[in-house]
Figure 1 (tube, one colour):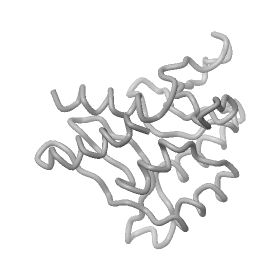
Figure 2 (cartoon, helix red, strand yellow):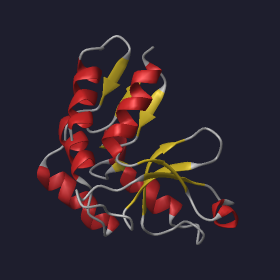
Figure 3 (spheres, helix red, strand yellow):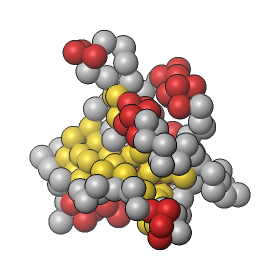
Length: 154
């Protein structure tokens, strides 16, 4: 959770190099979880409540947001995860949070919940299963997101 708090401060303290869509209500977060049939880990819930989604120096974390053109539809993690699930190879326990720029979907793996109720961050691509499954990038969302956004702002 501390990493997510640091991320929020980093984004808010660098307005010329970063942006965020705005925090979501608990009702919106619960709605997203219902639409995905999943529960978000604490660090990701804090990110959604404080920032919604963000971009920092070219690093874009999907989060959740709305666009007037799409009405009340939740975009970002909800829409991208649901679209990814159209591919039968995509594991249903993954929640998309970023694109890696090489065809991979950076995701939270809700099947691997730890004692702090956090999920590891993994990257999946269509060839992942042949290599033993998605590659683990980090142990939790906050640590991953802070590292990525710090690198983008340097």
